[in-house]
Image (cartoon, rainbow, N blue to C red; front, top):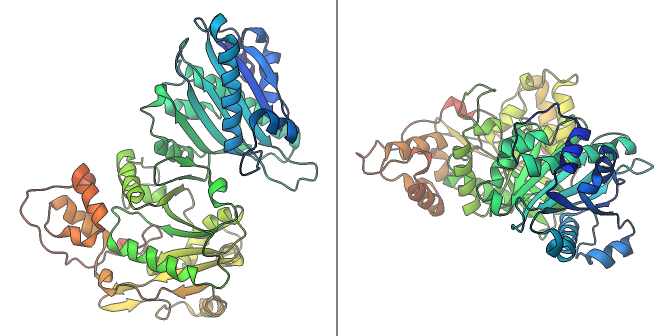
Length: 497
């Protein structure tokens, strides 16, 4: 059922195309934000060819009676959505399988949405999914998404949900073999200032070749979301679900590859964060972050494409170390903090290398802000956030917060941040790690040099060898020792070591 993506096809045309397809048949269950998805199919005409049932268990007691009580007691959540899909799809198979199972590809569409309330005190968002067959009597597939609703009007948000739902249905049946086109089509007849899609997951026999981590990358790459998150197992996660009301520790880097200094930075930074008096040690999430720019080759053009295999290599390694990974489009730290501050009000820690402290205080990076560096700092430091600085070795001298030279007009600002516990040196670090630079280790790996393994965690060395990652070469003549001084390129925002 695949077709070439036509972004100009209207919502009504998509709904009508599905209604006129004699095989597609199923039910719609929508909670919150009206019934706009099903309404689009009714308004398109010929809906009796597609719709077996529509419903909305709007009352919580009714919803619990039908779909069960979720442990989290949150009605706009992924567990609630999955319960809805399971229940509704099961009813379709149970009640219609014998009569028309040989000629129909059944589906169950569901969404649970919190649109803008009357007083506009909440942020609209929702979960949406389709469980569907692609051949009669076939196994089902799932496509699950989470959407943020950005319109400042309840009716407009409902309208956006209706359009997105039709796009999702159409993509499931007509773009299922082309995941990038599938993603792009979700924004048909919508704009990125109306919705953000920050999580998508493909599951089922027809999506065995789809890597959901790449789908996360594409969400950010296409501008559908500013950030995407997935766990050590590679499963896509919705950031608010994982980070809501949590203390967050962020560690940004290129991680190409992960070396011992990264782990020392991570471990010492987290340990120091946990010692803060206003941090609940049992309620902390550690996130390693890759920016889009960090996924490109050093000094690459801003429009250069991303090597997807290289991206997956880095993610595999971080996953093997048990890390939760975020991909973001936040080149500046203050934008990252602003994003996280909408999810949690608890204290956050940002662990970074000394070169990044220099970057943050470089006024040239804030020329586009009317308030310059003060405007960025008002965002970065006004929240409950603290920077933990890992030192750098240059020409035999260790550089840290105490050895940080600034223009005279910024000195008092820096002293204020130090005095107010906003910036702190990382203590008890392994000084031997300061002699090792990521790019030099990468070069040794490519050259097949002996002894590079001592500079990376054992799990990382094992994966690199087993999968021959990062251009790994073996059996060559031993290369020279690691004696290259740190490169100027390290003095960038995207390097942490």
